Length: 429
Image (cartoon, rainbow, N blue to C red; front, side, top):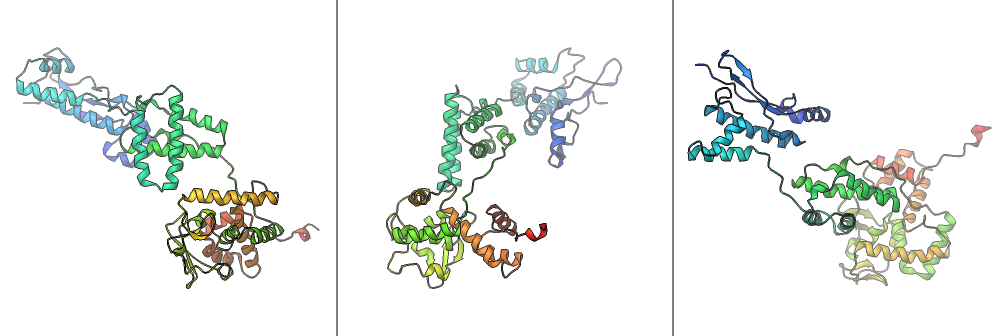
């Protein structure tokens, strides 16, 4: 005998669901913009031919992601197969599939069948996602992020995320509200408020941290999509410290040598060591190998970076043999000692100390401790290019500056205007 129905099949937006990962973003969006459904045919008792029945959607198209739609359609398909096998006939019974299932559940079948059908119908009904409150989402994200970030970076991250939370609560959101009530428009409004009160750079940094926050929620299935990644990044002009003129450089060194020997040595490490101020703040006595003339630096872009201690800097160091290797190289009052403070706090202390020197020489906010690193590398580049080709200069300079690629070094040299052309006046005569 011929079967009275065809096997139910899934329509998934006109694409092969098994090749989903190979589709382009545009193809996926086009598929999701179409209705997904189950279709099947049933034999008409009068004509004896299979006739296409009404498509079964089951509310799956309310969901905008492939995973949820496909999962629900598969469960619905299994439910449909069960009732067709049990003899459901849309022509004979004159009832819809939903009515048929309801009649079964209401007791017009055995207890065993009823239990099976109840389970099937419950599974086939789109379930509401378990709600996560704003309070719970923020708490979880910060706890997970703290385990994955350096302490100094997490402080800044936590501060930005908590400011976002405070803004939400001040704008009629409540801690017990579902995290899904925060939309893309909400985040854009917050970022606009930052832009109006600060700068594009601060706004972009806040966007980056909030995007990271929502990515944690997406990775833990607390939200469907990290929409913050779709918010545009504004163009901003980064600030950089200017290089010192030769006469300014010499005047500052002379003043420090006479009036603040501790800050003078700190600046020499930034200058001759081509180090960032915060890298100098991290140094311990044990990080300096005087005998082998090596210095072990915890850098920004790698765990430990080994650099040489040039002879000119080595001659300025006091005898460190009597100090504990665990002591900080620089403290507020001396070389070698205990200083219980974060790296950022240490850097801020020396920045404020140098601010007093800047005021004496009437230097603006464009100058700072970082300027000594720029000045040293600029001076070194211009001295080396007198006797070597640009490629040779950059190859040697990479070892000194610690840049990991030639392109990164070239960008840095352009930013600080280290490379300048020769006088081209003769070409204009």
